Image 1 (cartoon, rainbow, N blue to C red):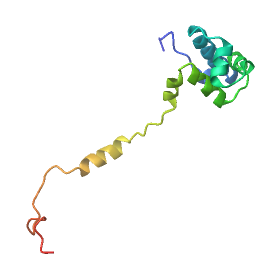
Image 2 (tube, rainbow, N blue to C red; image 1 turned 90 degrees about the vertical axis):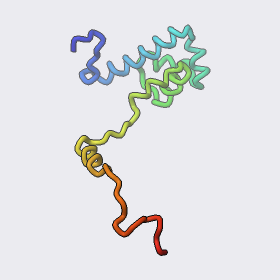
Image 3 (cartoon, rainbow, N blue to C red; image 1 turned 120 degrees about the vertical axis):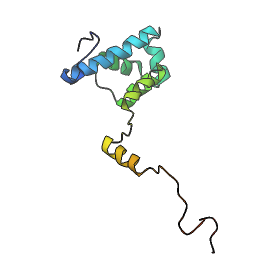
Image 4 (cartoon, rainbow, N blue to C red; image 1 turned 60 degrees about the vertical axis):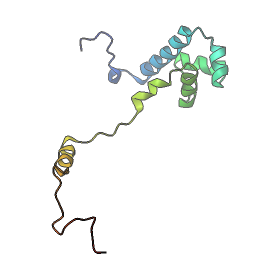
Length: 115
């Protein structure tokens, strides 16, 4: 790709991916001018746990979510949203089944029955 901001996530090692997440969290914390202690306290975790996260060490996904919530970054979870997609063939079949015209019942008005 010619876009210089493109990152090939697939070619990155797990360690490199974790370091990218760590840098992301630290960058946004500093952008919001919040200390590790402030964010950790608001997230309900220890400062040392936040430090581990920002260094790319092992932390739980729950810890990451708590920090993202405090930093108001949960919108990045949109990439995990599952959107049901219909196949083009199924869509075409459904469109063929749609009624194009209305017609009267051959036995008369369906609302005027002898029941």
